[in-house]
Amino acid sequence: MATKYRLKVRDADQEIEVEPDDHGNFVVTVDGQSVTVSLARIDDSARYSLIVDNKPYDIFAEETPVGFHVFVGGQTIVVGTQTGRRGKGGPESIDVDAGGEWALKSPMAGVVREINVQADDEVAEGQVVVVVEAMKMQNELHARRGGTVKAVYVSVGQRVDQGTPLLVLL
Image 1 (cartoon, rainbow, N blue to C red):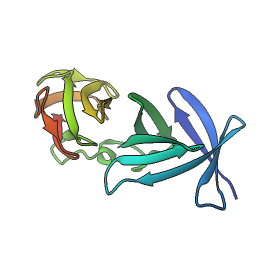
Image 2 (cartoon, rainbow, N blue to C red):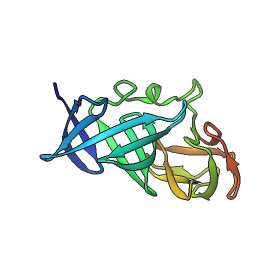
Image 3 (cartoon, rainbow, N blue to C red):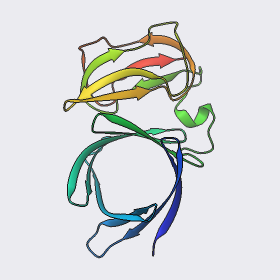
């Protein structure tokens, strides 16, 4: 039996229907067009192996308070859910500590290619703050909330592992 989801992909609302097939994959239907999809998480990372109609993709998925940033083919696709994955929103749903600080951590191992902010800069929610290159793909990392940059912990050209703190917002 198919399950329907209402998602916001980029800036468009989409109804997506997902149904398991007999081979352990899923048939995903969007706007009347169906594709066969297989998705497998790689280790315990933000990296996934995605196969769409027998074409492989290496993707990263970064959870946000209201959905995901999906990095594929050097592009970021913003996918929003109606309620978010961590509750109904608010600072407590985006890993803000008791002092009101939020740390951006690298969702993958790679090399820092751009840092678009510095300490004391004001940042808007969704603003690209750091670009990390992984497997020859430039992955834009976005601020999950607005605030003031307290500190930047990395520099351009630095290698980072998954989970490495990159910067902190107040």
